[in-house]
Length: 101
Image 1 (cartoon, rainbow, N blue to C red):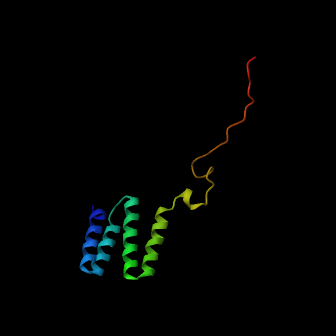
Image 2: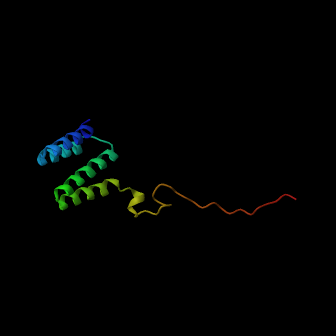
Image 3: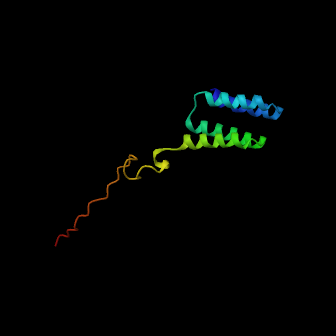
């Protein structure tokens, strides 16, 4: 639940100009259990917050965390798309066409 409520609290802190409170709320949201896509959204919000504050190094850390979380075997590029990635694609065997006459 915290992963879904804390970003709203962070926005309230931002509107009040409380930078430390906003960061603490975002970090609490990231510490709470959440779906991976929600975690990515929180990281993006935190990165945007850091950008708005001019803290580019902290924003880059968040973008790197997004990259690491979003990366899968297929997007990593290390695995052959039709091999170890689980798709196990095998081309169809070409059979001669037999026409009944």
